[in-house]
Image (tube, rainbow, N blue to C red; front, side):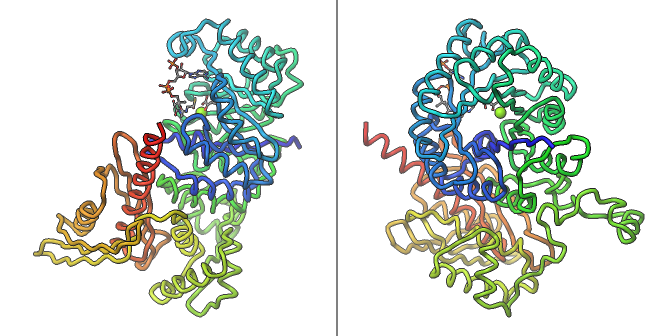
Length: 513
Ligand SMILES: CC(=O)SCCNC(=O)CCNC(=O)[C@H](O)C(C)(C)COP(=O)(O)OP(=O)(O)OC[C@H]1O[C@@H](n2cnc3c(N)ncnc32)[C@H](O)[C@@H]1OP(=O)(O)O
Ligand SMILES: CC(C)C(=O)C(=O)O
Ligand SMILES: [Mg+2]
């Protein structure tokens, strides 16, 4: 079996999804889970994009041990220097350089001739190679590039020191058969190709990202670039869970394997969905809530007699336990501590106590506590920023069919003051949000509000995702609680804290110039 490297770009291309903005703490949490999942490479960000992204990449590079960490850079010394500052302390510093090679991109975007692009590519790889032991180079828009030019530029960047070459389908244009043929062509026409690993990076504009990635594997790709839940620029990237499970279930056909711990897939999907606010559609392969649900009589009959009649993937393979009732109101601290460690959280002892009390109070209200509930709650608690921010202390709403909804909200400000305000609105959530708007020191607008339940049942936890906009930048936030109104308030305060922290950062930048 050939080993296929999994290069996860959830934190870079995934974060390029419209409406997603992750803090460095959120990125680190996702990176730790990707490490548990066993991905070979984590693309943690684009260090030259902003100080915040550079700091996030640096934190991840310093914390992650068993996956390689990389960052994206243009063919520019400034970008390479920014990436070096972020990645120099990682176990094996690795950079991901790119430049576009298609006529459309070279002519209209870069405004350069193919010869100039070739020179920039080679000189940037040389400059990077003086610092980084591993240089990955990508031909952006490779699939709309002239093949002979692509082969020539690849040969040159390999001679300059690149050891991984990525052939992205940047705009999701190619078909599986064509992509496979392109890999074969390059393997046959680039003289020094045997010195490098070949990588595939596919976008889903035509819904072909996973099929194209698998076609690349069939035709010699050594690495697949993908994201959790398939999030990413426009229609997204190839979905990691679909590629990984396809390779496992059809290993007889692909004759390839990965190092992934597939039982971590479901939790990783939940984490990314909760922190990015991008809901997973119910019918999504592998991680959708219907992926293992059998609805019709004939199917149910078949599954009851023999699961394999209609189930090619078992829920257990991706970490979903059929018996998910694990903790209840009679559980004690030991079981709770063990349980949260298994879920990947290692809080300090005093935090465990605080979490345990929260868990008990929830267990009192909710009949059945599933692993999903506990995970959502832990994450909500765990994601509180380490720096002082606005904290929701209390929310009360008075609602009647013939009354104007009125909310009273109590907050603690970052400097420790307790403030309280009341306000009305057209509905209960609107009343809470009007009240919070009056209490917050910055103006912004609400662009999106979504409510979903964690699990099923009348007493299921509510999870709310909001999207705020300030000065054309978007900030997502989520909140989980037993009650819809409390979850709504939490999500709003969470996203507002991102606005507030980003404004504070900008203010610092302005003050330093
Ligand atoms: C296919 C992909 O996913 S590529 C990655 C896309 N990701 C991102 O763009 C997210 C992060 N980006 C950013 O924060 C900003 O775009 C920055 C900081 C990188 C650059 O910002 P700005 O300097 O304001 O430039 P802006 O984004 O408007 O334009 C991009 C510039 O980079 C140039 N450029 C684009 N790709 C490359 C490349 N690979 N190598 C060198 N230059 C490049 C463009 O030609 C343009 O140059 P110009 O200003 O001379 O016309
Ligand atoms: C930067 C490159 C690899 C990219 O994301 C793309 O071409 O889609
Ligand atoms: Mg991409």
